[in-house]
Image (cartoon, rainbow, N blue to C red):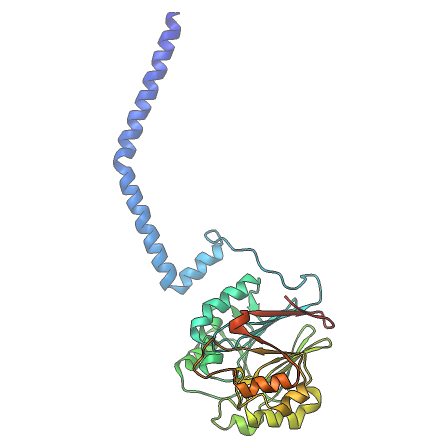
Length: 329
């Protein structure tokens, strides 16, 4: 019928007109819009990389990031602790993780800051109750400024020595800027996070007053229920002798983090016989210039029958305990 043809023709005309209008508008302006969006994207990326307040604002929105699922080593409803010996080359970094809070001991060289922060993020750890530095050498403290900037830290712990290095000065600047509680620790101090207890057993004051950076390392005996881990930093003959003399009866442990990355100047038989660990973790880099672990230290570990795990061979090493059992993950 005539009216149906008229209706169809009218509809076709409207569709053609619409297409012409859209082509006229977007045919000219679309390239400009795309260029503008590209410029805005580049400017936004630059601002995100260079300006921390802007980065914090964007991260706070949480709409541009896709957060990977967190790794679960401990039961979120249980009473477990995981200890992580991170693979950080020729350095040290040990993480204690509990549902009550987390503690990081040392953080290796500056180039490992991103890895450590990403590792903490992968575990769902958003803050550190304690961040402990055994001594101010770069292979134990180099990443400290970036770690302090990258995650909330409630308490920062050191041995009291002051070292005139850039990373040390930068660390102090960040602590002041963020108003982090700074603690100078020594023998007799105990830091508690839930059922985790970190007892400081060294160094003695005369070592702190010296410039023997390794010997003045904080010595930490960490206990969780009936399980224990001993960390001696880079303490050598003097620090180990003091430890055996003053605390030899209480330093037995399940896991010993090899002194000074498995150096022959540490890991004495006197200490190992008192500590009597089942497992020794040796944190060192492959083919490192120091030759760690030294043959003398390995012989001592063999003599006490301890299993030896090297981070450069094993990667990051994780053990979980409920205070009774101890299981490698």
